[in-house]
Image (cartoon, rainbow, N blue to C red; front, side, top):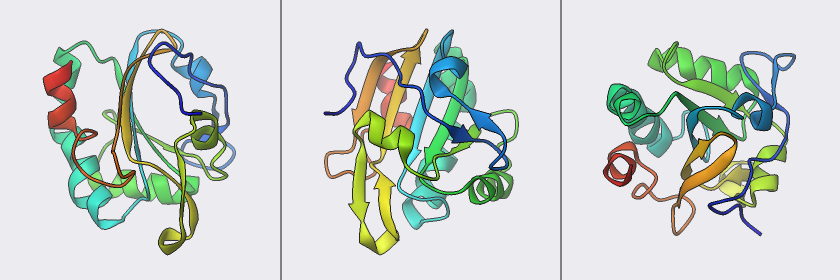
Length: 158
């Protein structure tokens, strides 16, 4: 079963920067409004050329709509996510969170078997979490497309 609007964000172990730097999303995003978007893989074409850059470009517009934090999640290791963040100069704007075992992604029910990307990955989605509760959720219909989970599309709905 997939997470839905009105559900609490689950606890899990995500990594930021290195494998020893742990973040529990249920705790980290328990207050304020957080926009979480997930991608199938760091440095993959749609994620690298469209999805992440769109959130970076619309950062100020999202903040103006009341978003306190923006976080990107992928089933990748912490070093890959950190390198991807540096490649796009996201520091201070987008938190790059690794879900190396897919624990968080599986708890959300948004996991997908993507053999061409190495196995377990996340469906592409965007959600708004207010005080730990999902208030908005957009999951790409095929899990990988670039439509409803993009920053401009989400901005229209906020």
